[in-house]
Image (cartoon, rainbow, N blue to C red; front, side, top):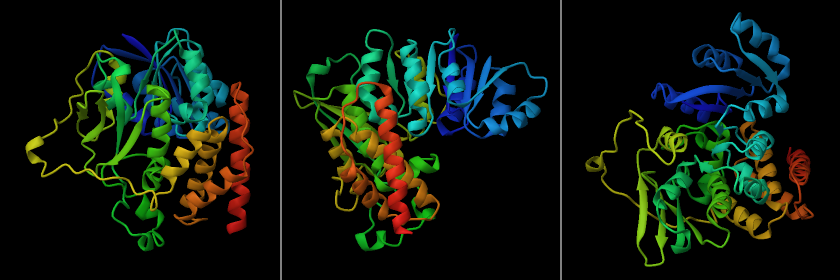
Length: 383
C-alpha cells in the first residue's frame, strides 16, 4: 500500500482525497494529516483513517482536539513546523498538497526537498516559487498536478515528447459572471460570487474563479510544469467537460474530457502512471446538448492580464500578485471591498513593488509578507 500524507486534510481537496482512498481499500495507507482549524473534521478523519501523525495549524485549539480524540493513539504536532513534519515523515511516499494559498508553501517545499512524490493541488507553490521548487525536485521526485486542467494536460501528453507541443490550451468555466456586463459586475455580492455553476470548491478558490484569477494562477503554474517556452492559451468553456487540451506541432489537438469532479484528477495523481476505479458516474456524452468555446474577456476579467504580467516580469512579482490577491479576496469575503476593487488593489500593489530576484525560499516569504502588508494598507484607504 502507498503511504500518504495530506496537507489540508479538512479542506475540499483533502476531503476528496480521503474519499478516493476510502473507495480503494487496500491501495493506500494514511500516515499523516495536517489541518488548519477544523478540529471536529480532523478528529473524525483521525478516528476513521488512523494516521500515525496529525498536525493542527491553530495551536490554541490543541487541547480541544486532544479532548475530541480521547484515547486515540496518534502523534499530535502543531503549526507550520507540524505540517512540515507531516509532509516529511520518512515512511511516506506521496504527499498531497491541498492547503489553499501561500500557507502551503513551506511544508510543500519541504516535501519536495525530502524526495516525496508530490500530488500538487496548491498551485500557489509553483506560482510564487516555481523555479526553486522545480530545481529541488529535479532528479529527486515527481510533481503530479491535481488541478483538473493540469491533470488533463498531463494525461493528454501521456507518451508524447514535450518538444512536440505547439501550445497548451487551458479551459476556464468563466465562473458565475461569464455573461455579466461591466455594469452588472458593479453590483455583484459575495453570495453571487460564491455561486459557481459547475464546481464545488472552498470560498477562496470560488472567488478566484469569479474574478478568473484562478485561471491566471493556473497559467503561471502551467508555464512552470510544462516549460516556460511553451505557449499557453486560455479559452472559456462553460460546461467544464473538456478540462484542457494540447495542440501538437502537426496541429492535432488532444483533449481530456470528464465529469467536473475533483476526485478524478486526485485519483490519477495518487495512482500515476496507473489508473484506479473512482466508482463515480460516467460522463454521458449523449446527454450533452453542446460544448461551447469562446475567448476570455480581459476587460471584464483584468486579473487574467495581471497574472500574465506577473509571469512576464518574474522574480518576486508572482509572489506579490498572489499575496495581494489572497488579502483582497478575504477583504471581499468580509465585505470590506467590492468585487471590482479586487483587481484594482492587486494592480496597485504590483505597481508599488520593487521587484527583486529570488535566490532562496526566504526571498519568496519576504515578498509575500510585503504584499500582504501593502495590500492591507491599500484596503484601509478604501474603507
